[in-house]
Length: 131
Length: 131
DNA sequence: CTACTAGTTCAAGTTAACTTTAAGTCAAGG
DNA sequence: CCTTGACTTAAAGTTAACTTGAACTAGTAG
Figure 1 (cartoon, each protein chain N blue to C red):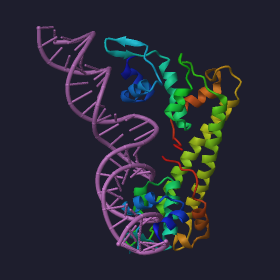
Figure 2: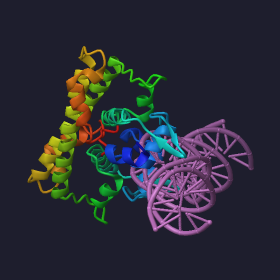
Figure 3: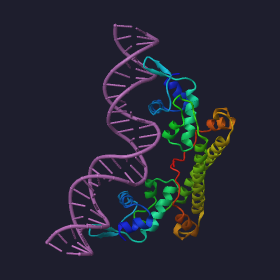
Figure 4: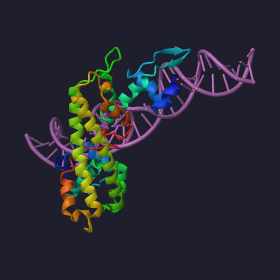
């Protein structure tokens, strides 16, 4: 497979694939002329990377999960603790969401006059979603 | 109040406060010499900004919520739709979390041999937490 | 009067994860 | 043989939300 086929099948732009290669996250299996050639297994690898990104791992953290030989070597402790982290984030976001729903419905003339909103303000020091 | 008192009470560094002022998110009420002077109400305003950040609004979006006179003018529709967004994010993250918990416990020799993990991979195209 | 402290400005630097751009290369079709 | 199109590289640019640095100033303590 050449890069554009991988791009199409994975949904990632070619520039991202080159970037991932530069970062050591993926490897091409050789070249045809200048062009990179990828094995089909690249798609599974990319899915794994995408999964990691969505679970909140940074690219560097993900890179650390692969052995030098390219095998994924995922530490179960890391998964556990990332899941815990995610759980914390979920709790904060849930509180936020509920507060926002309340504020959206609340009939108080100004949000500052609503006790629920004020409580929300006090508790607002927690985790962010960022997208 | 001078800037360091606001910093202390709000928990935000002075550099952030200057940055917020530059962005139009807050205003000092005057100067004593060179030094900015802030009214006590700045703290409520900062709490509101922090809340907005934590709910996933960008600083620009937050800036738009204040009228030129400085009054908060929060559109209930915006709150509602941000809450909906947050809710979507929560759902994705919850699926992620559960998948990670499973993968952390799963006895399959490689994660790729676990059907639950593979299902997780397929569904991994969704929202990210980013912290 | 002088030094010190806490503030000030403006510009540049930081971080992550990419994207864009410019200039070059190669294989294939006509 | 020459053009075309898909690919290549390396370096620079992007974005958000800040932080840091350098050079400067004003009120205050001694």
